[in-house]
Length: 51
Image (tube, rainbow, N blue to C red; front, side, top):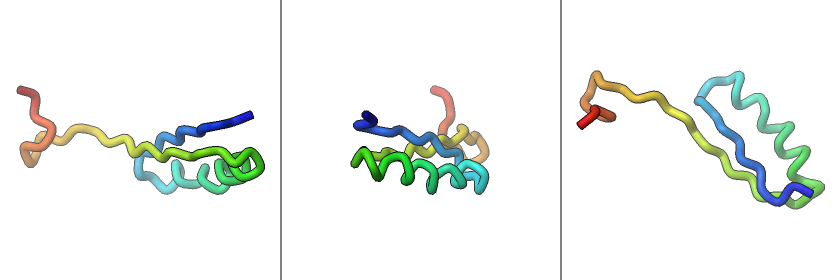
């Protein structure tokens, strides 16, 4: 039923609380799970500057 599950995360503890639920759903279906870490751009150190 679920071949692949994409889990977007933002690095917060609250977001990571979904992981046990994802595994509970993925296990019975032998689904692949991909974790995607979402980050905001930072201009304080030059990384992520717009060109």
